[in-house]
Amino acid sequence: MLKAVILIGGPQKGTRFRPLSFEVPKPLFPVAGVPMLQHHIEACSKLPNMKEILLIGFYQPNEEINRFLSCAQQDFKISIRYLQEYAALGTGGGIYHFRDQILSGSPEAFFVMNADVCSEFPLPEMLDFQKEHGDAYSFVILGTTANRKQSLNYGCIVENEQTDEVLHYVEKPSTFVSDIINCGIYLFTPEIFQHIGTVFQKNQQDMLFCSEEEQSNGWHRAEVIRLEQDIFTALAGQGKLYVYKTDRFWSQIKSAGSAIYASRLYLNQYHTTHPERLATNREGGPKTRGNVYIHPTANIDPTAVLGPNVSIGTGVTIGAGVRVRESIILHGATLQDHSCVLNSIVGWGSTIGKWARVEGTPSDPNPNDPYAKIDSETLFRDGKLTPSITILGCNVNIPSEVIILNSIVLPHKDLNRSFKNQIIL
Image 1: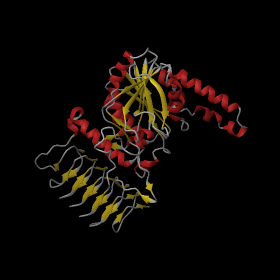
Image 2: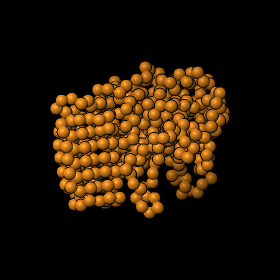
Image 3: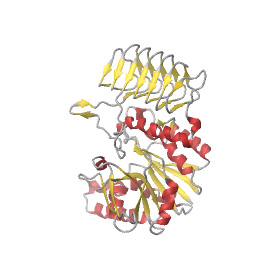
Image 4: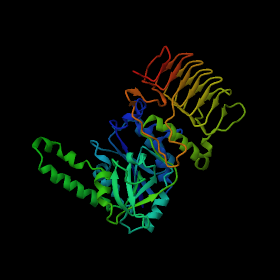
């Protein structure tokens, strides 16, 4: 029997995803037409003896999370539960805190994955790899190859090329260590909790030597455990940790710009996994180019041209002659006649006036480098706003015949002129 744990973080995390994370928890943001988490759940539910999926995070259980869970349980016919941490406990602290829930029913192994990755999720291959490598007590990290410069932004893995054993692990090194990076998807056996328990006890010992004030919140401090820095670094080189390298697609979803890139990767995958989700050119319908997802409730004029890499949410209205490319249009938005939307995310219930142009700068990886990953750009560089995709928060009104370029517009704004390279508060 298998289980899966998805680490979904909490409201203080995902700040680079604002203003979109104001309206919906980041893990439920739609990527390629379905909530980000659904891609993970779908991959887990395909495994034959997967019994339960646990979401661990510190979001307050709210209506959106509950609705998502009940729909997903019905769709995938599998038990899915949300376990709420009392505070942010780190990637290892969360699973250690809920170890009894994870181990109930005695699973032989369980997957742990971060919610903010987009991947083809080669889970069956990781299971086969674990059987072939090492003993039943070994742990597997999914790894992929990055270029030398970008590898510094990730956990880096030095491996034994013959056995795939992890010899050395460094989280975000300051100089080059290895071009194999950690993908945030792991396969563990219950023995991992002994190793996390050792770190927990050590943290508790350390707390004994702290001042009283520090000890008062010490219980929480002892429970904050990071899988990457505290566990993998110690396990490397002991014959217990292995890396399974994938050459299939993988990307992080840290910023809103990376959501458009992730959407492209998933839409491309739909050709093999969900061809029914891709729109086709048919009479009386809009013209599509490349991969486009259109929700059945959207109302789109047949003269509109959409694609490539466009996803249209529920109840969206798109007028005559509209052009949309490389963008995500969220539910209830209206694009009036002859407007143009490129490299942008249009928020829930927003309106773009006639002949208006909303455009951003794509933050894609270098197409000439097969190992390039998306850069998680800082918002500002040299005192200027870094050109990136344009984001309209929810209920933003863009008047007719204006241009909004490389800008971030916070929710509930009525604009009255053109803007470029600005954050509109």
